[in-house]
Image (tube, rainbow, N blue to C red):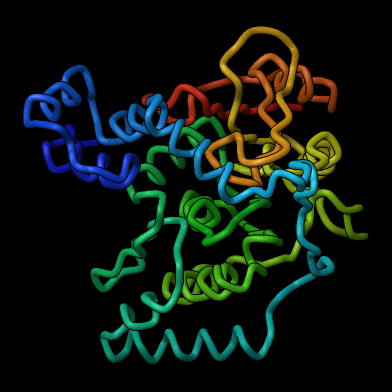
Length: 319
């Protein structure tokens, strides 16, 4: 990742602090000892000023007489395949747009989380950059032999890691999600369908709420990817146990962690973690290892999701 510039610092001031920097000297001070843009962003997000702004916003947006624990996960649809006439229509529209050299016009209709290169010079403008997606994919998949294997991607969202698994030789890939595909403003499944059609990859889709009982005759899979899901679950131990049941050889878990020692998990009843009410839990690294071993995995390897981020880990749990 490129070294941050003066303009990157100014953008961080405006986005996270809501103001302009005091002087050029202050801007220069933020560039010292920062190796890339992601580290700069993390520095601003961890600053006392930004945290104070979050606390103030939280006070304004949360009525004092409403307990924080009232946040509840939204109802999710039943499990099953999602292919429908709507999906077929999307595929036809994408094929036509590609033929007309106008794929970008379809992509721009949707909000994207993953930045994905769809060809024709079109890269979806996701909140997670293409460079970060590539770095994470390498860390997720490098230790695993995907050739000829089946893989389930739980929490697939726009499908970047499902697509990457297929490119790396997986024989069967099933992209599964629930909330991100059925929150109206996200249109996550439609965006996934556009990307799948543009890339012309054979990826199955499946509605799966991992906190519910597993559907009959579903799985197992050689490899299960469980990325960015654990800490969003109201009942993470049940969800993790379900993911483990589906993994024949390896379960790959990527999650937020608390960077302290010991076996514990922090509960976030409100917006305490990154001002996001869908973030419920923060396990320690040792806690995740213990939970994975408790689910029958004999070996658990741990690595940083990204070298520049200290509070994310990837766990490769092996049978």
